[in-house]
Amino acid sequence: MKPVLIIDPGHGGVDPGGGSNNEWVEKDLTLQISLYQYKRYQELGIPVELTRHDDKSLPPEKRVAIVRMSGADYCHSNHINAGGGDGAEFIHSIYSDGKMAKRLATSILDTGQNVRRIFSKVLPYNKNKDYYFMNRETGKVETIIIEYGFADSPKDDRSQLKENWRDYAEAVVKGFCAYAGYDYHKPISRAENGHVDWYVGKRVESKVNNLRFYEEPSWEDDALVNTIKKGIGFPKIVEKVTVGNGEQYKVENSKGETYYITAHEKYVQVV
Image (cartoon, rainbow, N blue to C red; front, side, top):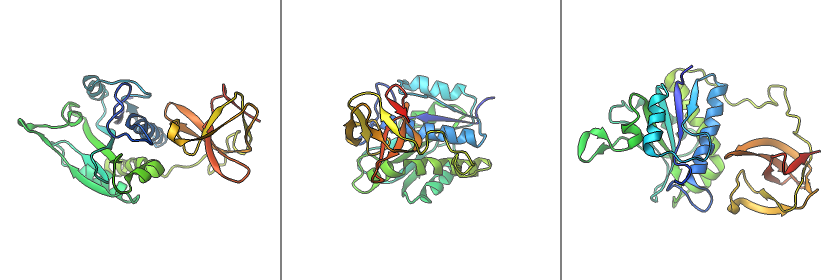
């Protein structure tokens, strides 16, 4: 079945993206957002695809070819902005009526994130073409470039993106469903469905020395809290989360403080 929607995690591989700072790299955060949305659309029964599922390089010509050849009607091109502004931006084609961009923006506004602008832009030397290649070269696919906020914001985008990226990703899913006429429901935890994953509530221990753990879902040095020795661990697993190309356990220590540690069985065991 061809996808209705294709999601494009901006940048990747040798291209880190300009919307990076000392807390995240744009290519990683856009992939994180995109993988979350990909999973949610699957849960909602909406045929969906990705331009990349991992950290790989996609030259512009290959990226737009994947979108064009997908057979999708719509595309989210996910990005993090730079340039000292604040708030989300939504860029649609000059040939679009802008209604989908406005619907996604309204949904983002409902989360508490401000929207800086909704716009389209023409090539300076050809007023009949879009300025941005993702709008210009993706054929009949209606592509919306979504800038979730500014990595170098002088206001609150940095903390908001760090803490609320899932809310913003979910808001786009909700807005798209409203625009395209699909039934939407909020994410339902497995516990709410009467199912508890086998590892929830159990202890996790390191199988190696100097295993890193983090203050947030991340693999970056800036989020590193400390390391633990072989046989040391955390008494309670709360849940498992996807982080970039891997998975981490959200854990609690004996004081109820929350941290994140790899869930890879090569490095940890659940006891």
